[in-house]
Amino acid sequence: MGTDSSSAELSVPPGRTVVAEIASTGAIAYAPRTLRLLLSQSGLAVREFDRLLWLETDRLSAFTGADGQVMVVRHEGETTLVPRDTGTEARALASLGALRAWLDARSQSDSPVPTAPYLGRPSDSLTLHTQDGRSTTITRDRETGIILAARGRSLQGTFELRMTSVEITQSTPEQFAPI
Image (cartoon, rainbow, N blue to C red; front, side, top):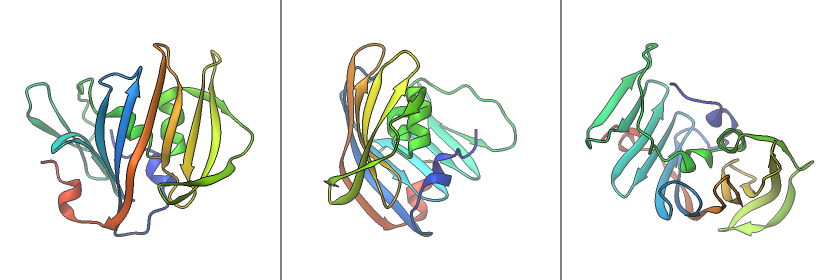
């Protein structure tokens, strides 16, 4: 565990947090549902309502187990098995690299194309392709690097992930606490 490359691609000022509501539909595990993604330079959290699904900071990881208890793992080389539902679809929207990994995308369209603003955010569009020929069209926030929307095809069928709201707020300790 430990923070991944998604925070390195993130362009949010220090002390600020991207707070986004994400709607998932189609052929994605647990869809349809709405998740909240909190993302800063030092942490990532995914919540469903008030329930923590996943938390990742430079100091620790945490997730809610099948028994409803939050398990905290300090980054000291421990191996821990995590439950299936850690909000991976929301975590995938943290950056282009995170989405590429989630989709196992091998290539993308040549370069991003500017599009109309999405949720008032300056945006561009591009398409990711998997080795077996599936494609996913994405809308990316030009300022922060987060993925605002993704529509494509999984092995089970079509899916859509879209942010229904995005704001950048002052970071608070509670946003990245394992509670």
